[in-house]
Amino acid sequence: MQSGLPKRLAAIGLLIGLTFVLLWWFDRSFNPFGLPSIGETQANFTEPLTRRLFEVALFVLCPGQLFQVFTIGIGGRISWVIWVLLASLNWPIYYVIGLTIEHTFHTRGPVKHVLR
Image (tube, rainbow, N blue to C red):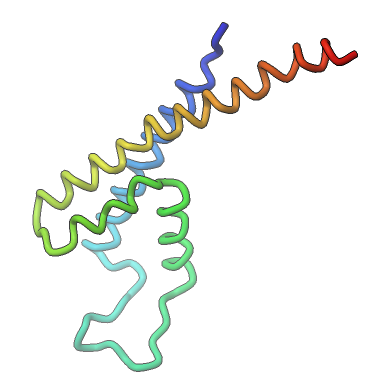
């Protein structure tokens, strides 16, 4: 008997991954944080807190994005295609997490009953 938890978590994971890809595209295209270019960078420059939180959340919620290292030096559309593929890796990762949670809570009930 399987509930819909793994499928729901998988859909949420895919949505989170694609949302972060769109947010990263928005950040690169429109520079909402006002980051300086390479020529304008000062010695004591620090990233805004919201930008740092965004990057940390990206790697925590989208573990497949760790493979973005392979897109360094690749320009244009190929880079974005790889990013979308990596964001879609969230589907199986979140599905396995959902299966693990479901299995943990499903098997706990009978074990408690046997121990009594």
